Length: 138
Image (cartoon, rainbow, N blue to C red; front, side):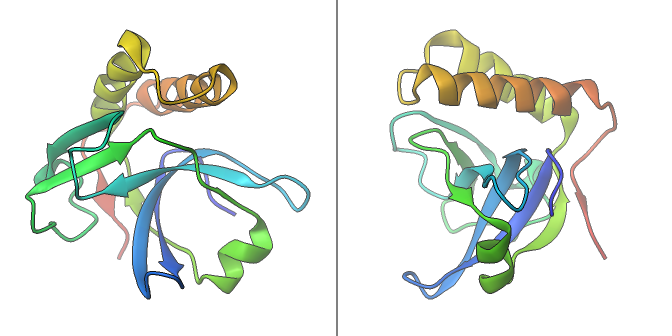
């Protein structure tokens, strides 16, 4: 449904609002896609924060930062993505992906080895894709 590197808006029924995620592993009808959650609170363990302007395809947060949260990798099946009205809003800047990759490889302790491997593979692919800035779909 989504490609690695795409930033996706997903409705969160418990929160009653949209949440944003970075697709990090492509799923199928039988396997859930995996995502990195984009948060506005930079104080959680395992977060990599940047000024909101570095991710221009989502609205700026009240904190002024977008935090890539590595406390877990949310998984969504294709059926869930449809139910929660998931939609691509843009693509992650490959240069930013490279910065995040360095952070993840430094000493991240919040993910399992398997999850870390998935993140490294995904971010490596995004960083290698070239390009310039994160873009918003219009």
